[in-house]
Amino acid sequence: MRVGILSLQGDVDLHEKAIKRFHKDVEVMRVKSKEELEKAEMLILPGGESPTMSKLIKRYELKDALLKKIKEDKVPTLATCAGIVLLSKMEEPDGRVEPLEALDVVIMRNGFGRQRESFEDKVTVKFDDKEAIITGVFIRAPRIKKIGDKARPIAFLKDEVTGVLEENILALSFHPELADDTDIIYEKLFSMVG
Amino acid sequence: MLTGTHRVKVGFAEMLKGGVIMDVTTPEQAKIAEDAGAVAVMALERVPADIRKEGGVARMADPEIILRIMDAVTIPVMAKVRIGHFAEAQTLEELGVDFIDESEVLTPADEEFHINKFDFKVPFVCGARDLGEALRRIGEGAALIRTKGEAGTGNVVEAVRHMRRIQSQIRKIVMLREDELMTEAKNLGAPYDLVKYVHENGKLPVPNFAAGGIATPQDAALMMQLGAESVFVGSGIFKSSDPDRMAKAIVEAVAYYDNPKVLVRVSRGLGEAMKGIDVTKLKEDELLQTRGW
Image (cartoon, rainbow over all chains, first blue to last red; front, top):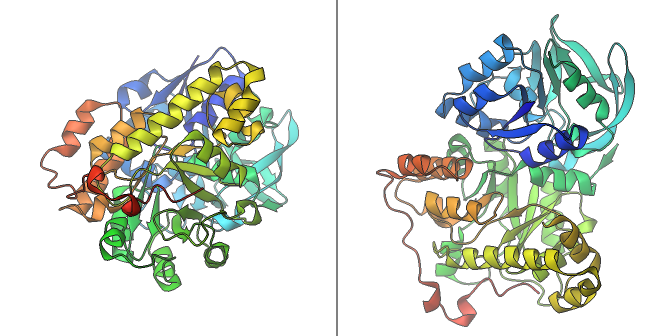
């Protein structure tokens, strides 16, 4: 199993550590080009600065390859924080990020505030067969403003939706890679491997 | 709901990895930095090269300048305080600055003590020239370390020296026997538990970025290959002949630091980098890197 982590910028190291902690036998690839992307059997879009990633996706012409991998090949995909921003529609498009719009979600960048307001809190994760309370670490996190019919809410901060599942895409506004009680996320991700 | 935790602070530093943090003095410069793909900007009144030239006491920037820069961009905004000046830090935290740099580039306010960074919800970055200094700052609560280099010179030699020194000291600690760690901690002047962390993990407990003299895409790629996890570029962008292109070039050089094809492409016809200073020509009292204890 080759897990590709989009490595244009962001917390790639922690995602690699988290994936290897959950599943020792995976091969982690740092993906920065179309050729590398093509080899990935699972994809992680990490946290970081979405404007930086978006600009590099554009300059290195990765948009179509990412969309093909996610929407046509339908590889299991985990998107966290900046990752969910890249995949969703923007509530207030301002050109800073050109999202892929692969997810039926409308998002607001930095919707919880600046770093001073960044926080950790309990998040309830609910799948059909399983439920768990995990630590949600929200860092200048995006806020999910609207969820379309195709996306299903799966993570909740009190009543607020902080994560969705849409076909092969598991997208979260927080960082499961920053906590060690988040196995339910990785179990779901690996259960989607065809 | 918990804010300002160690995990939230260091986690934020992790998000900045593989990126470029650019010094800016106006909202217009901040926009250029954001458009180029910077992961954050450092809001200043003067870039280090001008601080060096103009002399006088260098202090925290005017809150008005910082607020205007915060309004202009959506990426994180950092700002500098003088070493030991916790009232400047309280001011920046109240402003909502995302990261505070307790920086040797400004004139120190305390020649004995640094800020107790655990008192703040906003994370701090501090400079270091060696592992002992890095671990002392982490022991005081810093969430991110950067090499000091020699700011405002456009000369990467000191950043290289500091990064190589820190990496080689880390490798040495990994090799030591456990019963040798206490004496090593004493010799480094570093907290024992952090020395033990380095021994067990082969890395600092927080991310380690490069700063101080980075002026070209190749400088940035060099620092990344020497083990830096991101770079700060101070005077190097807005003292170059084409800041917009230089900013974009350095962003790409950091993302693709191990790909010489990218380095060629982004450097062709890039124009002049900042002029720069031979560090050996600086007098002892002109060095910024010796500030910090």
